[in-house]
Amino acid sequence: MNIILIIAALIVGCIIGFVVFRFVAKGKYNAMIHEAEKDSAVIKEKKLLEVKEVFLNKKNELEKEVQQRNQKLLQSENKLKQREININQRQNAITRRAAELENAQANINAQQQIILHKQEELDKLQSQEREKLEAISGLSADEAREHLIASLKDEARTNAQSYINEIMDEAKMTATQEAKKVVIKTIQRVATETAIENSVTVFHIDNDEVKGRIIGREGRNIRALEAATGVEIVVDDTPEAIVISAFDPVRREICRLALHQLIADGRIHPARIEEVVAKVTKQVEEEIIETGKRTAIDLGIHGLHPELIRIVGKMKYRSSYGQNLLQHARETANLSAVMASELGLNPKKAKRAGLLHDIGKVPDEETELSHAIYGMKLAEKYKEKPEICNAIGAHHDEIEMTTLLAPIVQVCDAISGARPGARREIVEAYIKRLNDLENIAMSYPGVTKTYAIQAGRELRVIVGADKISDQETNELSANIATKIQNEMTYPGQVKITVIREVRAVNYAK
Image (tube, rainbow, N blue to C red; front, side, top):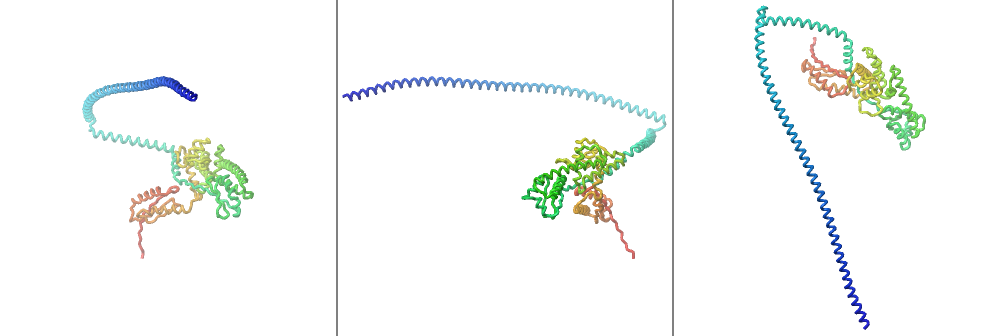
């Protein structure tokens, strides 16, 4: 019975608890729903405000854009109106100008009529006066014209003779100066210069065992020597010789002297090589400066910039077409001084320009300029006078000559380079040039024989009298000269002489 009561009490308690829980849960549910409704209302209001704000912003932007467009349209409209006003003004001006031109044309026409009328009156008066003059003088108009022409001829002869005498007197006064110009212009047309650079020095050794010591273990000695001097050393099978190759002759000389000292000393290793190369480089620089000073003193040239003296000294290690550049410069300087003295010019300036004319051939830095222009810029840099600079820059016709000193240097440069024995020429190239000259002439019809003489400076062409006339020989000579100019490279000029050969053969029996 107690168990039943306990169970009943539990059941009743559970029912009451369920009812209470349901009531409480329903209250919380209603509260949550109310809270959610309030939150949704707030969110809705926020979203509406945001949408309104975005709408207002967009509206403001559109209004601004429309306002800007309206302003632009208004400005364009104003410009169009202004252009229309300008066009109307121009149209009015053109209309006024046209009216003025019409009035001017009408005035011109009226004046022309007046002039024609006056011309007719003048013609009548002139004919009347002519008749009166003929009646008074007893001569017709043609006879009077002949007398007038004769008197004018006599007067013209007298004036011409007087003018000729004046010209002769003036020519006598300026004959010396004009003769100098003519002589200089004539001697300018001599050989031009071509240059071949020597880039190899052969160093002779006593025996081939030295080659191994120069190369060193795994080539370290030869690499150190090449790095220190900036040259390329070629050790090949050539007996008792080592080839030193470089475009800079001073570097080749430094390497040659360093090799000589190293072999004489016997100690050949990278540290010793660097020490000897530094010592030899200093010696060569001192010798270059001493050579430049001695050259300037020998030639009597004073006031040279120290850098120009060093450049002149460097010429000792440079050759052009087998001719030592320093000897060429000294020879050109002496020739220029002699020629300037003969022409009555300043020999000291000529000697100075002759010595410096090739300083552009020994540059300290790489340059794309020709040696004449580069030498002129060096002379200007070191404050040489303008006539000296012009003579240096113009000795290969790369700039205009402004003084008589320039052609003198040009001529003496050519004389020094073109004299017999001054420069070497490869025998094969020389023979090929002569053969090409003869072959060009033989390619024309009517040519029977050709001879290249005077070291290729003259070409004699013999043609048959039955094949080419006298007039055609001139054309042939001109054609051969043109073809040689277009197809060949040669120093100086080539004279083409065409000989029309006529043979008459008889036998005495």
